[in-house]
Amino acid sequence: MSYTSVITEAWKLLKDSKKYILYYFGSLFGLTVAVSIGMVILFMIGGAGVLLSSSSTSASQNPSALLGGVGIFSIILSCVLYFVFILLIGAIDSGIYKGFAVKYKTDKMISFSEIVKKGLKYFVKYLLASLIVAIPMLIVIFVISFLGGLLLGTINNTDTAMIVSFVVGCLAILIYIPFYLIVGSYFVTLKNAIIVEDKGITEAITYSFSFVKRHFGKLIGVILVFLLLSCLLLLPYICLYFGASIFQVGGSLPSYSSYSGAEYSNSATGASFFMLLIGYCLQIIGSIYMLFYAMYTNAYLIVAFVKIAKLDKKEDVKISEPVMANA
Image (tube, rainbow, N blue to C red):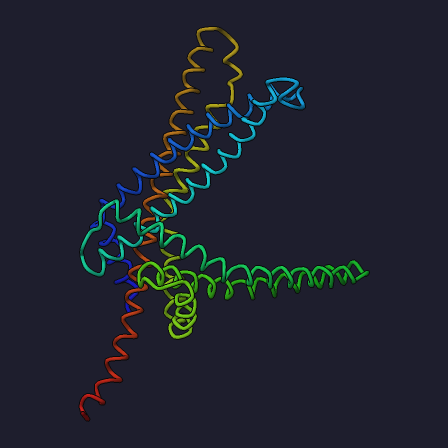
């Protein structure tokens, strides 16, 4: 498998799927605005209700106690609204991921309604599968960390403790790097097994273990190539981020000479406001660029998975050819 072909085909897939990018931008912007407005209103109602009822103990003593219940209910409702927002964003992201996969495999596009319907199903399945795998893994990591802390706590000598801490830290780094690569390979495969291959939760978990075991070297290569590629892709974002920080800091710091006269002070204030405006514009551009980067990441992972999965099919064909010849 050629890694350069994965990079170029992922870029071609991104260009051919512009409609999905518009879907993602539009839905993300619309949902963010709607949920932000809703949460602000609910928090204002909740805060007002809690403040009005702070001196009351029951609705019979003071009607404002009822407002306290309304306020608490509105705060709970705002948390539910935020959960729905996360659910919808995850559904749209998973649906667009499926749309990329369908476009790459069949050269067909799916509608926005299909994206939402399929995406919700895939997002819930992937979330449950991830929790089933991640929770035991986190428990093991916690136990190991806890035992390591107890071991260091039993050492009374400060110099010995420092040496042991240094050795444990080096070993942790050496263990963490391959652990990260293995876990990253597995969760990438798990997502593709559920969304691209349309497998069930338990089937996807077992399939992913087998897939990583068979193609571990290629999956590691895909991840390492993408990490190197990300170093180049993220350079524009880093420049935008530091540029925005420079303009915002420069716009927020007052000049000593701005106190010399009212006329100069007004011009300095205008210049500061202009610098802050440029900084915020650079932040917005950087955020949009990161969304494009996220879309390219999806395309890259889909192309890489499909290409690796095809290797299994080629092996199956080679194995079956002698059998067919004998028949």
